[in-house]
Length: 481
Image 1 (cartoon, rainbow, N blue to C red):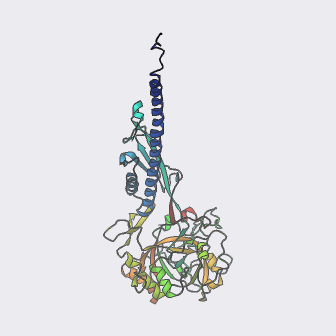
Image 2 (image 1 turned 45 degrees about the vertical axis):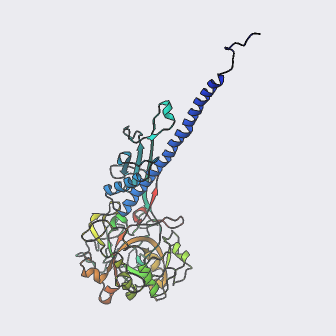
Image 3 (image 1 turned 30 degrees about the vertical axis):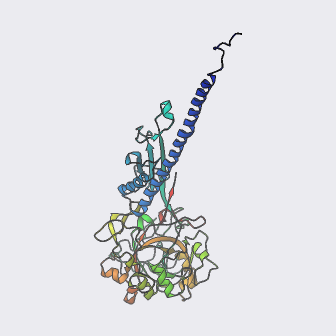
């Protein structure tokens, strides 16, 4: 009997198939695991870029326009958000700010955008290779020992339209002043200068709001920050406060005497849930959580009661107000004390306005820690939002104009940040009134509040009004890409 040939034996063939299968399985494992690591790292790199860009934009709002501070904030948040378990050094992160010589969409060459690029051994725009690559686990069998990832994000500062913790004050917006009965060019250089094409018509803190065109005795005009101009200046122009021209402006909030509505005339706001002097004082010292929005175009504020404010009313950009600022509760809320907690000034007693430092988004001046410490303090408890009301709407409401004492409803044309310097007599005694500003006569100095117009963080709510870009004192931070 013949024995079978060893050459024809199937023994050992399985080993060859297993070897081929193992090679295929290893290749598949390399694809699944190392490729998965790469995509997980890519997602983490995007998170790093997002966090850095948002941190840089927030620093722009709170800590000023100093590129070094913005870069430091972005780098810090990029460094504490790891990519595949490893931090990111400055060598792995580029921070770029929009400006006159640098265009970053959507800001272009305007300030307001922060772009962060993250590179982990990936070629950058100059084709340089960064360090700290992502490791491989199975691909090194094929001679691939590292992977490259990169990510980019851009954050921008944009306009907000709703905010909480409103001070219970509402101040008249700026108007185009064309009628002057008391020109004072000694203290106000542009008082009485009604320049052609000037959207604010030579307005100064010395002016009175007088009758609009068509009425006897005056030509003063007001255009809200969200309505097209009727002054022949083109769409988008308005007469209200603007960030570039009025950031840091010192305002004195004062009573508007019947028929003598002066620059800075104010009303006491009845925030939701607030009735009487005690609640008014509490709202000054503390935070009324009711969101208040900017009124959208076409909002007439009709149908709301003259006294008090409902939640829906506040969200719609309408507020119930009473005449004047109550002297005792106002002074107690701002600087004197009494029940309900610390007065506003005592919540950050050393904070002062410093016109020499660089403020948010590169604007001139800012709140700092103290007269001896110029560190920016734009998150001070003394910075609170105040409502700016549509004075044309106000003047068309007899309940408002006649100051009958029953209150009226105002339309919120804008909301600005307000750094409270103190009561007028205190600020004057400290020598902190700007040239031309002064307290009212007699007891008025004890009820007038002095502060600076500033920007502050807020929220954005769809359906609420939007102001023109140059009038946006409420700021939000959002990812643009």
